[in-house]
Image (cartoon, one colour):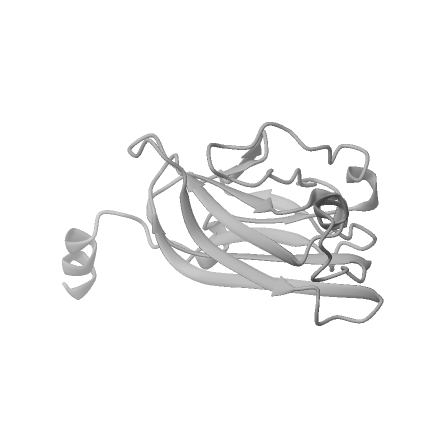
Amino acid sequence: MTKSFISSVSNAPPRAGGDKPRAHLTGSQGLVVRQTPTQPLKNQFPALHWEHELGLAFTKNRMNYTNKFLVIPESGDYFVYSQITFRGTTSECGEISQRRRLSKPDSIIVVITKVTDSYPEPTQLLMGTKSVCEIGSNWFQPIYLGAMFSLHEGDKLTVNVSDISLVDYTKEDKTFFGAFLL
C-alpha cells in the first residue's frame, strides 16, 4: 500500500543526478586563430568562442553550445562558472600617451552575461576585474567567477572579456566556462 501511495503522489520518474543538463567548455590552442574581435552585444565586451566537444570539453543532457552561447535547456537553479587566464607584459600605468594605454590596458575584466528573449538588454550575471598595474613584468592572471542563478529554458550565457588578445589558451585547465543544473 505504501508503494502505490508514493507512486500516486509523484507521477514523474525519479531523476538521477547523471541526467541533469551540464556543460564544461574549454579554451584551447586551436581556438586562438578563431578568437578575433567581433561585434559585441550592446554595451558589452567581445564574447569568447569555446571548444565544446574535444579534450576536457563536453555538453550533456540537452545543454547546447551555439554561436558563442551556452543555451539552457530547462528552467531551474544552475551553478555557472568560468575561469579566464590572462597573460601579458606590464602595463605602463599612468602613461599620458593615450595611444600607448590603448595597447596596454590598466585592468582586465571578465563578465558572464545572460541574454534572454524576455528582456531586451543583456544582463551581467558575474563580473571580475584585476589591475595589471600591480603585476610583475611578464604576468599570468586568472579570474575565476562562479555562483548559482535561477535560469529559464532558452536563456543564453556567454563570457565577455575586455581584451581577447590577452586570453591564455595554452592549456584547457587555464581558461574554461560551464554550467550545471543543481
